[in-house]
Image (cartoon, rainbow, N blue to C red; front, side, top):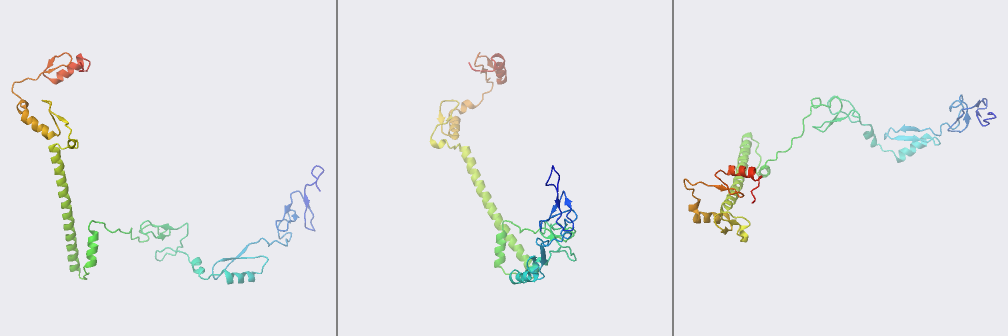
Length: 287
């Protein structure tokens, strides 16, 4: 067997009538004998333990569960052990009943690959009836209206008895709506009145010159005509009107001349003074 260079090359077939040397032998995974290409299968070399690793599963007709048969045990014993311990007939309905499309006269079974859930009605349908008009979709569920006097209407519904006649029901609804609308309007008017009062108080404070700094007693407002100082704008305006009222009235024929702070040149027009400062003094008025 083999060659002088490779003495362990090749092996003889284990079948008694064959014994052929094979350089690429096959080892049976059940009986672990070596065979040639012709006798490599279980049936060709009549393997005595060919069924030891076979997996046979029988579906129970009572519970629709799979029962694995043991090769070294009688099938009747395995079946009796399953019936006495693991068999649950209530599972048969759940296992065999397949979910179908809810559309009338549609017998399509819903599986993982052909099931579509409608976004509007949240029901599952087959691919054929996946669109709303095909399965007569009622549309999305309407939300309850949330208007300001919804709670008032619910309370009135609980208190007052329901009337079967359409005329009395419509009159009750109209009166309830009118009462709710009037109460809502009165609350809105009260809020607007409070807002107007607060706004008028703020405007009056602004006119009087009341500021947070005036409460501290600091004299922050100074008269432009004299060195006098005042705590608020209202006192300053009153002082100017009383003390400098005559000087504030412009007299006819008086000409105001603005002098340049650097060269003391006079100008009647302030624009000309600014142009003069920018042109002659480099844009600065500091002496």
